[in-house]
Image (cartoon, rainbow, N blue to C red):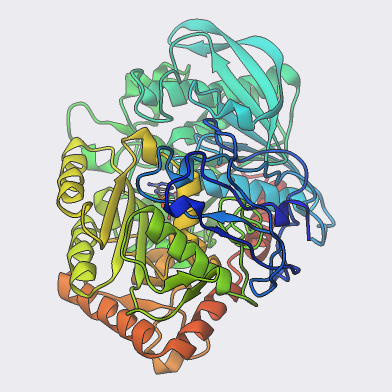
Length: 618
Ligand code: ADP
């Protein structure tokens, strides 16, 4: 067990009546049930910036029943001046040794990811998690992996190791050569090259939604990455682009840089979500130095929906599909769905032989309840008692009705059961907003707790959830925590909620893969999901007799409220009425291997299949 593994206790900076309770808990090792990246060791990669000194933590290390040593819990209260998720946490270094125990691939590749997001320094949603997780998994298999990322003003720079300027060079935009800096640093053990133009691109408080033209900024970034490879003579085997933001890179590569000095790389594009197509005017594409008008054909990048309009438009995502050597989407079911519907289906069918569906994984070092420094108490599948403490801790800290009572440093099952549902999500239509709002009402009626940790980018949605928060947040059942307030802008809180939850709700209308259900399961939260995309590939209904072995959650199909009602009611009954089976189910979902170790190999196969591709798309 690592040193970090025994240092998770933290204390409230401003003790309150609740926060004076100190719970010492046990000694023990951390068996993990399936291969995962190795334990964190030395320095910080995930930490809070508004750290407060620890006070009041009384060290007592005697009892053993939780399987972890010497963890002192100072119970939080909603009245704490500093909320429990904003306290000081220990250093958590997950950059070291994540390759221990992972078999190396015989043929080693150089892969460069070009991306708009990377966790934890620039994460908005799953894209950030996926880039970091896949990069670490491939690196663990012996490949050389770099990530290229815009040097956003809002990057969490304290989480970048050894940041230094590599070079200053010029890259093209709209008739000018823009002085541009390339920095290098390490993030979670991965080498990252940061591109910083000297103009206004990528400035502002957030990754997306700055006061610059986003499309033009990412066109600039795509070209600046290739320009950097050209001036430094860097020739990876694979350039791996993600989403519409970096899709134009393949056009720039095959029609410009491949004719200059970069010959070796082949291009892979991952589509994480087909909601955004990178709609672009021809003149806008021309700003990166390509002739936008030559891409306005059906076989290249015209946006089929605009054919016959004046003017017709382009789709960078479509261009990326056509011009990449391989295209991957993030689950087998989403692959089928995208071949069957949506205006890009005909393009995908045309390129079917290079289109793959590979399920995302999760980074089991970053998401590991047995090592997670943000939890008041760690736990693992062999001993889930700590999970109960996490639940009690969150319920108390948020002022929710608690399940069980606290005495003798233990939570006793002597009260009515109060199942805790969490929903951690971007608040956009795709995520099933009407089902989330319905669940809030239903959970309250059924006597449970529900916490929504939500992030809305649309003002109308924000206002709707704000008024729901005003309506419910004073009561004992519901907390709606919206991330427009920096108070709730918190990766740490998301870790605590997954650990505390009995259920993780993902009622998406469509979901390319979905990480929340996989992370939830890793933390012993049973998923309640709508059967779509990657949710259909990872969650199997408990009442489906034909699926006894794989059954791991509660699934519904309709997008109506009645379908959700039935799934939630079944899940609550199971929780309340079958306690022994419930504990088995919690242990079972924690042991499911949704790690990148399981799926990164499929990406490596795709890389190898195109590596020597003589084929220049088109
Ligand atoms: P998407 O990429 O569509 O947002 P995913 O389920 O693939 O959805 O990934 C979401 C990731 O973002 C998960 O790691 C989840 O925990 C995190 N996340 C989503 N919303 C929030 C939030 N409001 N606060 C903290 N983390 C969030």
